[in-house]
Image 1 (cartoon, rainbow over the protein chains, first blue to last red):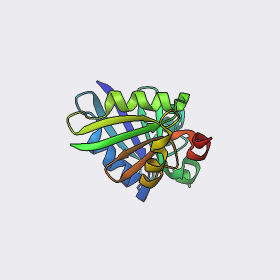
Image 2 (tube, chains in turn blue, green; image 1 turned 30 degrees about the vertical axis):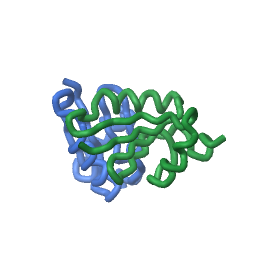
Image 3 (cartoon, helix red, strand yellow; image 1 turned 90 degrees about the vertical axis):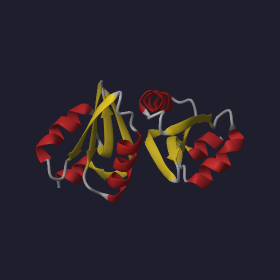
Length: 78
Length: 78
């Protein structure tokens, strides 16, 4: 199983992307964790280290996929 | 089954995103078509109408997901 982490901040673009991830990511190959960086600010550093620049973003293994653009990580930090 | 179309132009960013799509998109829920807009230029208009602004992009149903940024559609038109 590959670990997939979906980072978001509750923005409309994030919600739409999350729906796609939850609906269409292959559950037989991945364990998916959803992290709301707005409420879980202590995960921001981990996201940055993984290469996340903006949300929504999906990290699968070592690869980062920014899916559309909701907000920069700087904005999420507020 | 939901129709999923992955539009790309052969760029390195596109190739990495395509790998994720092919590896992790749930095959029991989607039929996936991969379209190379560089070689299949007659599909560019269709991609534009679906809302694709840059490649790589994934269109699932009516939703468009731009995954990272490889090239603008204008650049693909050359």
